[in-house]
Length: 472
Image 1 (spheres, rainbow, N blue to C red):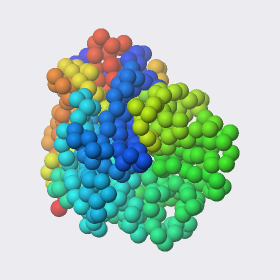
Image 2 (image 1 turned 180 degrees about the vertical axis):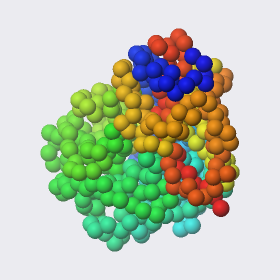
Image 3 (image 1 turned 90 degrees about the horizontal axis):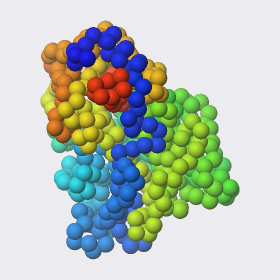
Image 4 (image 1 turned 30 degrees about the vertical axis):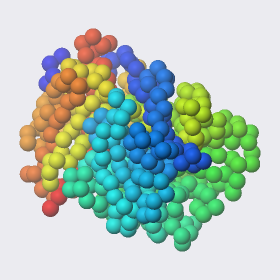
């Protein structure tokens, strides 16, 4: 197939695909698990390779080789926009006052910290605490600062090396001391842009709510709520599934026959559904697996007993991925991040320009051709391939234009060949468009081509919602 094939050829190719090639439910290219051990003041990270072999990385505790000395919880990681390194929040020092926060880059290939995105003292102008972190379509780190009253969005602009903040709404049921450690699930919505986030119920926050906030934090909508008995504790907010459902883990403190469960809000709204998991266990945060993989699945860090599980969200089947030990998981486990899960991403390079990264992960498809298409139409339900994979893209004139090649100067390099590291890079330039289209969402999706793969498609890229935000 010629790389600049017509849209019709592209669609026929996708529909005929029958090979999955590792894009299956419950399979991964590596998992990164983080937690802490409050008893010893030692944070730790566990990296599982694609076959499940573990490598434990410790920090603090007097270890001079540790990348940072830390006593706080390590969780809220995310892959960077180019899908090469993991962005990990950390606390420098051990019980310093004020605290020194940092965003570090961790290289899973070399199992080492390779750089710092930002480092600063905890204060009102930057960051006083964090919940989960995510990246917006500018490639900026966004979190919820849950130690303020009221809580705020805190966004670190990587391009300008500055912070900006957006206020979260005050909602009935939240108490005057701030939502505090009860806000989580901060996740960029790859289907419509903006940020999904949630509260988890506790003695301070009852009931739990699910929200969607616009990319510029100017508007927040309540999607759903869950009222649970006082013995039920919901965890860190949850994650977005591929059909727009939201899932959150929980723990029943009294009825141990259903100790761990996850809640699911259909379509991101309406009533929540409780699904029992393993009795006598305590599960923490849940993370979605690849959107284009057949079906829906979740990765979950198990606090007690220690371990990593996979949940099939269609059948509610729980599979043990890793059984932790005091050596491999020396404390509480908070979150599981599937490595190389951001195979399509963007990062601001100027007031109206962005890089568009295509990286299916770890150099696995180096030298192969790729096609990335754009659309202004909603990406769901998209195209269901016969093998179960999903190509989340709407179809309009922009789709036809972009599938045939570049659209200079607006979009170039969206069709090409992955380099020796398995990375392709396009460019978005909206200088001529100006600020009149700000807030418009461009939906990107694509495939990696390989003549040796069944019917020519080796990999389906996850959707990426790019929100136009041209600076003054």
